[in-house]
Image (cartoon, rainbow, N blue to C red; front, side):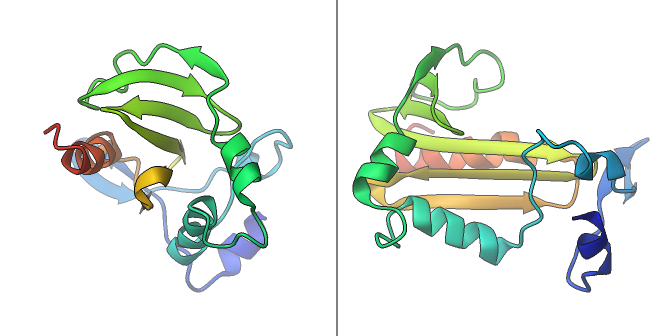
Length: 158
């Protein structure tokens, strides 16, 4: 919870852009008292292990059938202006805890989020066995370009 985060010597500090300059901000304690919220405190290592698990690196924990169900599109969704940087985006869906995209013939699984002072994104292509984790200790829009550029390059749709 919040106390563990605040006492962790390896924790980062949140940042916001104010009047054209980046500066520190505070963590909102309300994030830690809202039971339905699905946030986590995690390191790059933690998220990389989660990425690897979703790519099938630990079949004794997450079997192929389980991952197939987890990454299956469930509900078709519009992709509108937020995903307009994803060249070659053909379809978008909600899955089970994920956004699922058909991107130039490749399935891409994605989840992103943010709270005051932080931004996180994870996206991967199971068939290509590749993905990326992006953790920022800033409310930056860099992920809006970095994630699609990675996959646009991968699919040669730049």
